[in-house]
Image (cartoon, rainbow, N blue to C red; front, side, top):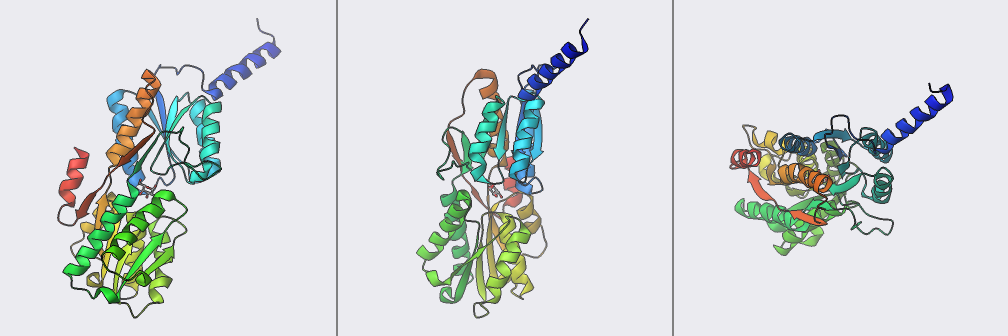
Length: 330
Ligand code: GLA
């Protein structure tokens, strides 16, 4: 018979082992976390959906966690360990959480890789020891810019009287690269740099885009044609909605988003075209399915994922969005 004290000590040790993630899972199944910064955003919903398909195909258990701030991220990592997960894929709410995330994963004996937003260390440089899958941000931004300027030419806009709204989220490297890529392409095509206006957003959702865009557009009533760029579809849609609110109609606005998930789809599905002209379709399959499989292989076979993978994008408009989305889903 155990004394009460021995019993308590044993319980504590077992609890600690479970919390540290070193006990075997009851059914022997591999458990993998997929932590995202904005679970309500379509892109992250799509990533989760594809990660779920990977879980089904490979037979692991996927634990989806939304973590909108640093505290929640660290709690999420502890919870994953308590659930006997072996690793996780993460798009963190702030890349500067990198060191804390790496440490907390190590303490809990969890493998970690990042997706979408690359984690940075205290020196502001990317943490090379964490494998990462991100988009080719500059090239994709350039594609967005080239698409917008080609459409402006097709509409025979006077380029000298056209404004560019760069809805900016520059604290995030991929965000800065995307919109700077767009800006570079537009200026290279002949638009005066003085006509590019930055609208810094606080949050990367539609509301954040709207709130950033509205005062900038209001300050320039002389410019009646606008190109809208941003790091994702939501930011650009916010800018397009702000322009609509100021009486700028679809033929005066060319918004080119990045993402191509539900937000762009809903806009293209409207009977009447809006100022949301195009999006660059990213691959939630590569970011959700392939990352989860890479984590699974790392756990079960010890094969470490490549340290850096960049994915590309495809131009998506009202004309081809149904076909492109069907191909991605297949
Ligand atoms: C960042 C953005 C998201 C999405 C992903 C894609 O995390 O905030 O909206 O565009 O990149 O990589």
